[in-house]
Structures are given as structure tokens and as C-alpha cells.
Length: 173
Ligand SMILES: [Fe+2]
Ligand SMILES: [Fe+2]
Image (cartoon, rainbow, N blue to C red; front, side, top):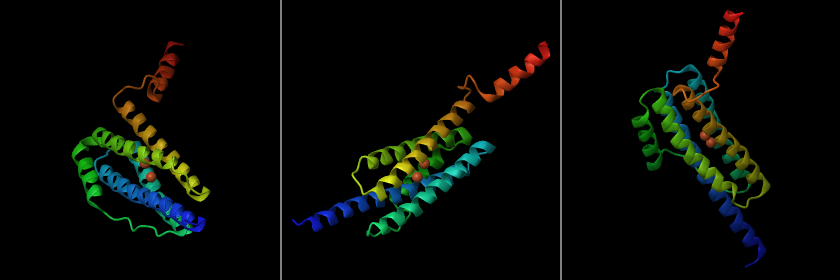
């Protein structure tokens, strides 16, 4: 096999991987739209809205990279898996906490997939976008977990308490 063919095969494999991420990010965006319907906490709403925007941006940027690499980007579409993910999110989204727990599960899937993709040997163009998006995915999961901790009272050093103690100290003076 000549090296040109080998290179083409490598690029085809990389584009295939990036196309999978496009569909993954598209599905993730769908679950965020579903979860947002069940959230009444303002800060959670605003965070999840931002994360939805990140996933939509990931789809656009990955599409551009696949094209730049000479591949054919997929037209992300609402497929069977996407429908399942969305209906599971709907079923679990009983109130803000339920929706957050559903999104924690969804983000674990997204994080796992990006983790795997970050191990794939790619041209720098692909590697950079995967690492950047992986950073976003980690941030999404961490923020969702922090919201769950806050709403379930797991947080020992939450801002409210620090504020309260500051007020109490003023009284004691
Ligand atoms: Fe994403
Ligand atoms: Fe995410």
C-alpha cells in the first residue's frame, strides 16, 4: 500500500471519529433542550442554557474541521438513539434536581466519548478541537455536580452560609 493511500485511510478514520462526535453533540443539545423545560432554578437555567450553546457550537466547529481535513461532515439528525436519550431525560426530569441528575448521566456519556476521542491519533487540527471540547465537557459535568450538591445541601462551605456567618458576626459585635 503506498503512503498516499495510507494517509487517506487515516484521515477517513479521523473524520469518521469526528463525525461521531458531531452526532453526539447534536444528541446532547437535544437532551439539554428537554431538561431546560423542567428547570425553575434561575442559576441552573442560565448554566444549562450556556452548555446547550456550547454543544451547538461544537457541532458547528467539528463540521468545519471535518471539511478542512477534506472529509464529508455528517448531517446530524434526530436518530433513534437521540430520541431514546431525550425521552429518558424527560422521564427523569421531575423538577430541577431530577433534570440535573438526568443531565449528569448524559454528560458522563459525553465526557466518556470525548475522553476516548482524545486518545485517537489525529492531525493537530482535529486534536485541538477535541481537547478544547473535552475541556468544555468536563466543565459541564463539574458544574452540574456542583448544582446537585448545592440543591441537596451537600455543600459545607456554600456562599449562603458564609454570608449568614458574616451577618451573625456583625450581630455579635
Ligand atoms: Fe459538546
Ligand atoms: Fe456537555
